[in-house]
Amino acid sequence: MTTKTSPRGRPRSFDKDAAIATAQQLFHEHGYDGVSVANLGTAMGIKPPSFYSAFGSKAGLFAEVIARYADTEGRFTTEALAGDGRVVDGIERLLLTAAHIYARQGMKSGCLVLDSTRNSSDIEARTITGGMTDRSRAMVEDYIARDYPDRARTLSEMVMIAMKGMSSAARDNASAASLENFALMAASGFRHEVAQNARNA
Amino acid sequence: MTTKTSPRGRPRSFDKDAAIATAQQLFHEHGYDGVSVANLGTAMGIKPPSFYSAFGSKAGLFAEVIARYADTEGRFTTEALAGDGRVVDGIERLLLTAAHIYARQGMKSGCLVLDSTRNSSDIEARTITGGMTDRSRAMVEDYIARDYPDRARTLSEMVMIAMKGMSSAARDNASAASLENFALMAASGFRHEVAQNARNA
DNA sequence: AGCTTTATATAGCGTTCATTACATAAATCT
DNA sequence: AGATTTATGTAATGAACGCTATATAAAGCT
Image 1: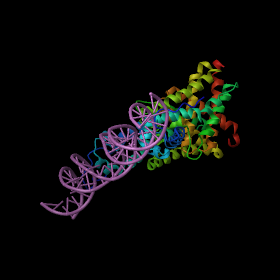
Image 2: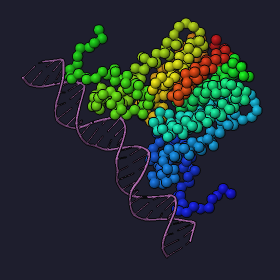
Image 3: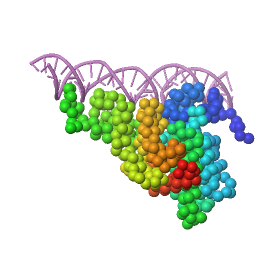
Image 4: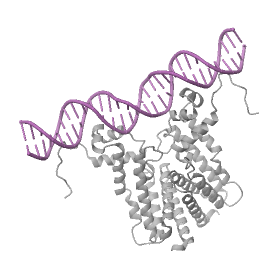
């Protein structure tokens, strides 16, 4: 059973998971620095003491938001790289899926992890996104290593640069078609890259 | 002669061009929101009234900084696209040059125009970088149109996504080698793209 | 019922933000 | 010399920032 017996004190008057989901929307749209604790409290319908009782700090909430992202939208990375096909096909799937997910839908565009702490001077927040970004890159590296073990690190870095380009461009309102065109171009370049340097094919 | 006759009132006690160069360094390193007027004043060695007398506002100074960038570091775009060679070669030169210029050198990395207002909520500052970004893209479009007039717009957007990827990755401390690898991969994808859709070759 | 524990609301903390009143200093113009 | 014009230094403005001290309310435990 997942439901725990009720804890000791006064029960929380709001849904913490829903509040985190609300915060995720705000951080995705405006970035970490662009959302104030006052904004968050208003959107969640709670006052500062409730906020700090539940999340500890703004950065603490942000850590929970990023963890949630990995389990929701961020899963497309794992899914695109699943299966037994060739690595070059999986990378193309990853890039194309990112193009579609990053393209603006309403107030949301780009990747929360890659871009929400850009230009922020908050070291704690940057560490959170930086860690998650490198975990994503490591996943790509492990996947690529199936076919190209000796160049997996380098190739994963190249893929991440492409992902960052699509995320940034999406936040600048690039169309889904533009992002898709780029994804195909990058995938084509990736195929050429591994074909030309076939030392580890 | 370029020196104008002295204006009426008390002369400025600091070098305005040097102050703009100082501001450019700070904006490049920390982004628009990451630099306060107090920071700028300290670095320039002036007090707020002098600052506002010279630049009007923080955004006014930023506009002068961005204009200066176009005439200094930003010139690599024009230079890479100069000459009579094939468009595919010029695009590869552009991407490779960007890779080298964007790679971290001291406190500076990435592109000031592409990334300094990312996640900023200051509409004026975003408008300044957005305008300059689109002017750069238009230059790339005009260049590409020499060989591929019907697809120049689309292809220029793809190139800009690659530039944004390199700038963002450079700001995340990507190595010069990583950026160069990506530039070559993107250039290879670009060649393949225009070769496959050779409707306007 | 009373104690303990946790969450809430009200109100305010100190800091930093971009910007500005005000008086004064340094230049040109008449 | 005196008026005009522009720049400077001192000091402060109102607003927003992340966060918290204090008191009270709502639950479980004994």
